[in-house]
Amino acid sequence: METIKHDNGQDGWISHGLPYLLGILVLLVTPLFLDTYGQGLMTRFLIFGLFAMSFNIVFGYAGLMSLGHAAFFGAGGYTVALLKLHYEVDLFWISAPLGILVATVIAALFAIIALRASGIYFLLVTFALGQMLYSLAWNVKWLNSKGMQGITGITLPDLGIAGFTLETLSFYYLVLIIFLLSCVLLYRLIISPFGLALEGIREGEPRMEAVGYNTWFLKYAAFVVSGSFAGLAGVLFAYYNFFVSPNHLGIATSFLPMVMVIMGGLGSFLGPVVGAAVFIFVENFASILSPQRWPLVLGTLFVLTIMFARDGIGVYLWRLWTKWRPDFGSAKN
Amino acid sequence: MEALRINKLSKRFGGVNAINDVSFAVDIGERLAIIGPNGAGKTTMFNLINGQLSPTTGKIHFFGQDVTFLPPHRRAHLGQARAFQVISLLQKLTVLQNTLLTINGTKPHRFAMFRPIRKFKDLFEKAANALEGLDLWEKRNEPVSNLAYGEQRKLEISLGLSMDPKLLLLDEPSAGLTKEEGTEIIGIIKDLDPAITVVIVDHDMDMVFEVAQRILVLHYGQVIADGDPGQIQKNQKVKEIYMGTEDSFDYAGTA
Image 1 (spheres, rainbow over the protein chains, first blue to last red):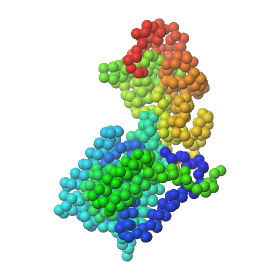
Image 2 (image 1 turned 30 degrees about the vertical axis):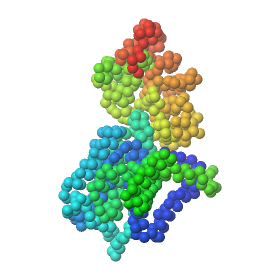
Image 3 (image 1 turned 60 degrees about the vertical axis):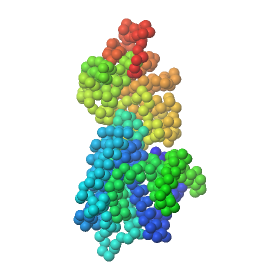
């Protein structure tokens, strides 16, 4: 909704850009002072931030309630895992593009079925399709390591550079680069005519139809693009986690981006990233404090968000910033 | 030449004949009003013409092309624009966003994915022109829901015009407006390019008699009168429906 407001020249680039610059700086520098555990945690946050942002395209912008987005996330991850398990392939330039491709194809197929329904039925169909993959992953031997549910033995990818192997910190920076590139791409998508049209569909599909938009096509494209980025997140997750399980395809994982998007700010561009940060870090520290009861902490936080920052924590923080930011002599003309 | 030809059109909802074997044609540039009591099938007729509904039987031709089963967006590209009875503007989006979306809907770059919408200069110029003409440029960054009801009506109709339509469908353009606002809408319609064909549905007889060259009266889904305003005023059946005994009014359904 903020997309066009930026062009009226009322705010200087400093007051607009400063939070982003600070954010990028923090992401760049912090891991240098953390142990591998902390670096891993930040990697995890970026991966889920990307997953949540991809989901936001469909959920926040186009207003489609999908409950099967883990299918694409998991498909990306399983592709990486299967390539390693059956073909000993861990070259990044093969497994990552293939992971994205598989996720995209599955999204393209699922969307054809799911978009026949709308509203709550759309939610049920996407849920059912996701669970289908989940049960497939449970039951097909080829999709599991010997004697277990899921696939182990995944490693950090090989970048194909002689004499260079990724370890925790360099992998973090690889993920960061991919994350930032995805942010740029997704942002450009959101401020494009396509992105605005998605918001139009969310606000009133019949009107969009009547003024000339093939809304089915728009929703389809949004779903597929969103699926590709979810797949990318899944690819990175498989490398990070060394293990994929049917759970990464099912409802438990589909809920994560939904919670993150709602907590961070539905339909705001970076809100989902804030939501992912809150979720991942609170989950981590709460589980250290109370290994059994950490979901309680997250649940409480979720309820508090709904009560006091209904538009999302990210949006709330942004408002605080625009209210309290120092005057940099903004470039008003 | 004909802009629109409706041929033996029927629409059934369950056992109800909302539109029952209706035929008529509208010439290019003609100003046609469709009137009739509530439940007469006026809005159903609009939904069939614009593609929100498909007919049970019959055909619709638009500038000679069979559009009977085309979806609304295809009809928009052929030159139909519609202002809805219940304002359909996207309430949470800004005035400018609404304008851009409407103008862009029939443009080839409406699906452009990775180019910022700001870069489409011609689109912005057109939007700026449209909004300046309405004195809404100052309010361009406000959500539509901040506009007064009359302003929203005007905006919706003007946005329809910004699509450069060949046929403009106006569903109760004066509903809920004050006398002055209604007069303003009448002014807008009268000032339209004579090449644009206009079909209006309205209850407001001032409006209808002011702008229509021809009036079609629907009753229970059937055409019971068709003629110029003078003929319609004198028509006995029409008088019965509108001014006759009270039980000839029908409040059973909405139009």
